[in-house]
Length: 420
Image (cartoon, rainbow, N blue to C red; front, side):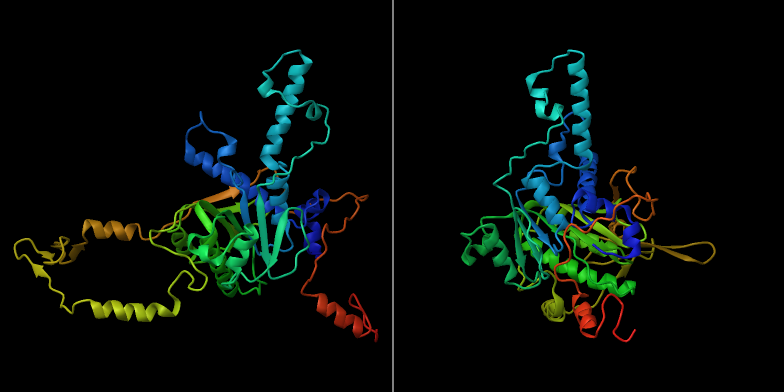
C-alpha cells in the first residue's frame, strides 16, 4: 500500500488497514463478486428459482489461481471467503438483516421452522467459529516475493514461461506428471484471477500496450489450466481498440463483461474483464510453448494458403435489362440503380450488409459495488483525534528499497544527506 498524500486521503486505503486487508485492491475483488452476481441475475430472468449460491463468482469454486498476486490482497480475499467461509458486502448485509428479523420473531414469541432458525451464538453476537474447508486449493503466482498467507500456496514464477504450467499443476496435485498434460492434468482450475499491471509511465498508449501483453500472458496460462465452464477475471486498461480484445475473448467464453468496481478510481483507465463459462473452440489446444496467436508465423501461413488456392480472374456478369451484377460462383447479387439526378446507387447483398453491420462486438459494461459506498476519487474529512495505522503487511521487496539503501550509504535517509 502506498504512502503518498493521495493514498492517505483515500477512504479505501484507510478502510483496508482498519479491516486487516493488505491492500485496497481487496475491495475491487469483493465488489466484482457482487457485480457478477447482478450480471447472472439479469441473465437468469427466473426470479422464482433464483438462489444466491447459484450465481456468486466464488460459487462451486475449489481450485483458484491468482496471477500477479503480490502483495496478496486478492489471495487474502480468496483465503477468507473460500477457506474460512467469511462473508462480506451484500451477503454479509443479508445475513445481518436476517439476524435482526430472527431477533424480532423471538421477541414476539413467533416460532420458525428449525431449518430457518439462526444459531444462538449469532443471536448473542458471539464470534462465529469457522470450519476451514479442506478441499480448496489456491495458488498465488508472482515474480516478486510475497509474504505467506494461511491456506495459500505461493509460487515465485514467470507466467510467460512454459515451465510455470507444470509447476502450477504440481502445486495443485502432488501426483501430477507431465505425461498427463495433454488432459490438463486431473486438477482443472475453476477460476483464474489476474490483477497485474505494469509500472505506468504516463504515456497512455504505451501503458495500454504493455498491459495488453500482460493480459495476453495471463490469458494463455488460464487457457492451459481452466476447465470447461471456468471463469477468468483480469485487469485491463481501456483504450481505443479495446473492443477487439472483447471480441477475441468471446471466442473462448460464453459471456464477456467489462466491470468497474466502486473502489476503482473513475479517473483511472483501469477496468476488469469478467469472462464466464469457458468453452474452448473444437480442436483448440493451449500451450505456453506456442501461445495463442500466430505471431511471426502469419506471413508463412498466408503464403501457404495463397499457394493452395487456384489462380482465377474475377468474373462478374451484368444483366442489361435489370442492371444487376452477379458472379457465377456466388449467389449474392449487387443491385445497381441510376437515379434521376444521374447518381448511381449500388446496394450490397443482404448477407454482406448484415455482416458489416455486426462486424464490431461491444461488451456490456457493469458498474460494481454499492452506490452508497465510498467514492474512490473523493477526499473525506478526518477527525482530529484519528490514529494513523501502519500497513497490514509492509512491502517485502519494494522497487525503491535499493534507492533507500544507497541514500543511507551516501550519509542520509528520508530525503536528508550528509552535506545538508
